Image (cartoon, rainbow, N blue to C red):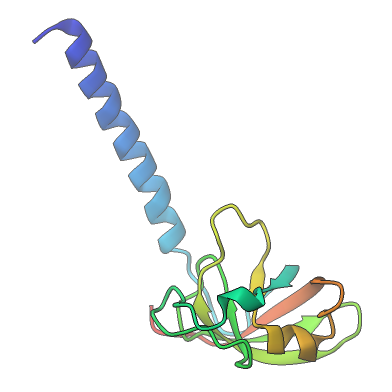
Length: 134
């Protein structure tokens, strides 16, 4: 085997091991009931209504649901808009896009109840009420 081929295979093996361990670290995040998180929330576009979510169900803009990067599907959260103190309980049924740096994407109904439908973004505090199945 040539030195170049050996080097390429070795580097590929190292990168695969590195990236698989990083991906596994995200999945093993441990969550507890009453954990609090804070960040920015946005809401899903109307054009996604009826599309499949990450857990396989159809997105319904009138349901009280949300997407989060790593919380288990079925997790119930209490979300409070820090600007107006409006709150709502939401169920995690999808994942935020990997390029999205926001804490949550919520349904249109949730954004309406939280009072940020017009602005599109809100500073929120999230409390885990009940963990879903991992």
